[in-house]
Length: 334
Image 1 (cartoon, helix red, strand yellow):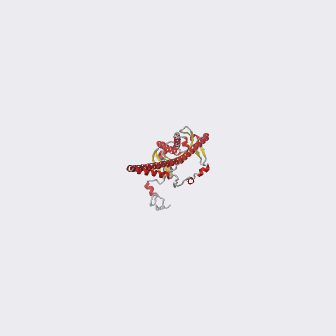
Image 2 (image 1 turned 120 degrees about the vertical axis):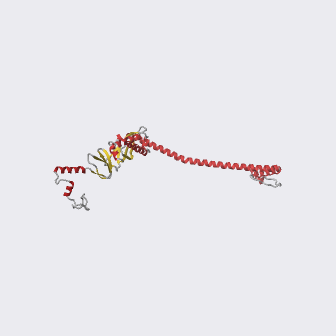
Image 3 (image 1 turned 90 degrees about the horizontal axis):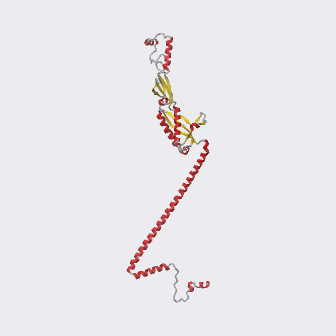
């Protein structure tokens, strides 16, 4: 090793040349250190060096001094006073942890149901099996480490009790069909409230109902119920389709009848108004000249009557009218 303290030199004394004799004199160290003292110095250095620790990038560490929280440190190298003055506890804070309720999956992907956890009673007194998974992450490491004993077991117990509470208010039809999302949200919110009350230092990221099914003993009956429900929905849809077809037709016919009646009404009203106007005109004319008006009315009436019949005009010198009228055929028919 070079005695220089320039670049590349690991000497802690900077650029000055290290003179051991001067160093001993300045520090008033003896020229010879007894063997026992040297070992003691080595042990002290080892003891002081034990205070160095490294926190991984996905971790945080809590430093406690005489059992009381002193500080929280993030990733990187750090130093704390050695035990028993200060101690450290670490936890992974960036990882999203997963818990399973009602089932277990192994590292190989095998699935095993836990009926004791999965079976629960619904609001309409039916039994249902619910397999649920939840995800959480650590938000406050000091609360996570020290406020709750066996915090992961506590989270699991809270999850199991909460899903039983929520399912106990629901009907089994809603649990098996359309109510899953609502149940998941209610369970997540309720769990977070309880864990916040415990000051567990965790945040529930997601709650998911993995499988919801009736017990094996009543699966056949539930299938029959589901089939009946499907038939019911089909009949309702068919009836609504028929209703949507018939009602517009009936409304169209009704509107047509109303329009027709309105036209008939207008026609009759206009005709009555016209007749009234003609009658008033004739009355006025009759008052002025009755004879002329009567003759005019007679001629008008005869015009209307004769226009609907056959008319024959004969000379008064014709004696026999039968050939002209075709009456001789009547005689032959007899």
